[in-house]
Amino acid sequence: MPRIDDYIAACRLARDKLATESYESLLARSGFEPAGGDSLRIPFLDRVYRLSYPGLEFADTSAGTREVPLQEQVLILHYLQADRPAGVSGEWVAYREIPGAAFYFGAFVKRAVDPLKQVFGQNTAKLGSAAGRLKGEPVDVGDIGFEFRVFPKVPVRVILHAGDEEFPPEANILFDRGIGRMLSPEDVAWMAGMLVYRLMALSKT
Image (cartoon, one colour):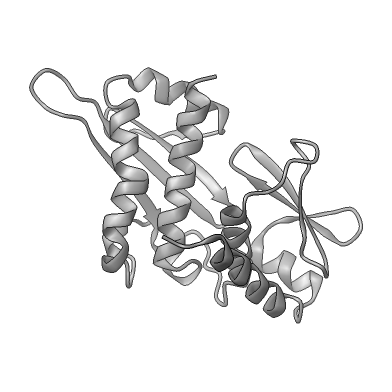
C-alpha cells in the first residue's frame, strides 16, 4: 500500500516533467478546457478542479477550499503525462487485457469489482440513481450498465448482473482499448476504485 510520502514524491516527479511543456500542449493532449489565468479546468467525477500553470497546483472549485486528495492529484497528473494519448477506439477490454495488468489484478478486484457487487448487487436501482448524478450514460449491457467519461479521453463502463436467491451478483468494469497508452495498470486500478467509491458515496445521499 503506497504511503503519503510516495504520493507526494509521485506528484513532484510528475510536476517536474510537466513543467517543461507548454500550456497549449497540455490542453491539446489532455482534452481539458482552459480556465482563467493559464490554468486547466478539470472535471473529475462529481468535482471540478482547477490546475494552475506552470505551478501545477490543484484547487477544488466545486467545494470551496477543500484539499484535493493526493491520490486524485497523482492520477490526473499521470493522465496529463501520457506520451501518446489515444482517441477513443470504441473497442472495450477487460482489465486483464491491459498490457501489464496481471500483477495488479487482485488489487483491481479488491478496490473496484468487489465493492461494486457488495453495495449494488442486490439493489440495481441504487446504482442507477448514483450513476445519474455522475452523468453516467446507460448502456444495454448486463442487468444495468453505465458509461462514464472519467477523463476526456478515458471512458469507463460499469456493468452489473444482479444477484438473486440462486446466484450471487456479478460485476465487470471495462475500458477502451487505448487506456494502456494513457495510464499505467496501477493507475487504472486506482481510477476504477475511485469511480466505484464515489458511486457508493452518492448512493447514500
